[in-house]
Length: 250
Ligand SMILES: O=C(CO)COP(=O)(O)O
Picture 1 (tube, rainbow, N blue to C red):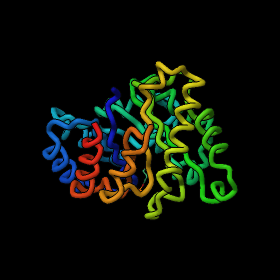
Picture 2: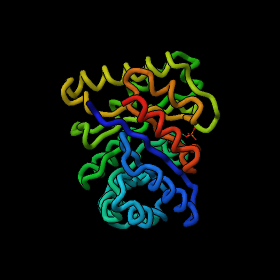
Picture 3: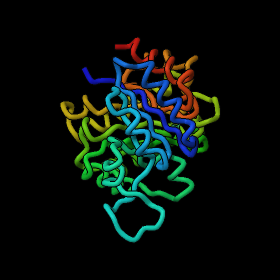
Picture 4: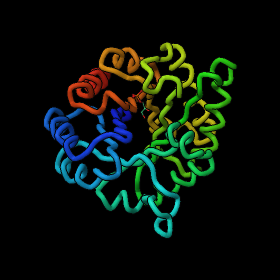
């Protein structure tokens, strides 16, 4: 049985004071039944990794460059993230696809760079509302999944996060049928490409307005192996009940 994953994406939120929430989270989950990952802003990566050292919590970054080092002002590389003590990196979040015009090719290259540095790449995919309304959801998912996932993806180095763009930070959540349809589709596509044995261990996260109140029903959907949580991961008070809902499924 694959270990489920509760991942928090703090986005561009959190100064040093936010480490108190991480400390509280570490204290509240000394023996979790699921994997717990927090992705703070890059400015907090090293302190966050030091804080959770010795606790069963992992730290990830929110983006990386494709190159290991070089003349790329303002960027950080996958080996630098690993050097901080982090073990994962989110790539292809819809906010980066939109704010920075990131393409599937670029995201795949970032995921490859993460793999080369020994990091787990959390590859995000998801349709906009206009695409869903036009009946294009599964086509968009297939295209992003195929284009953004490296050939070397395994259950150890890759997690796929399905985040419908219209559900992020809006309080709107797809129906459980809609979530299930996309997660089943992702599993099928990955199985066709990588084979059932390999794909069984690739975790599929749902992201988009996951809250303590809706987590349990989302986690009951087949092929949902956890969540990538934004706003509700910023405080221990909100994230802990979500983690507990996920633990209740194992
Ligand atoms: O984008 C997300 C996580 O990466 C989801 O954000 P919210 O949970 O704030 O909707």
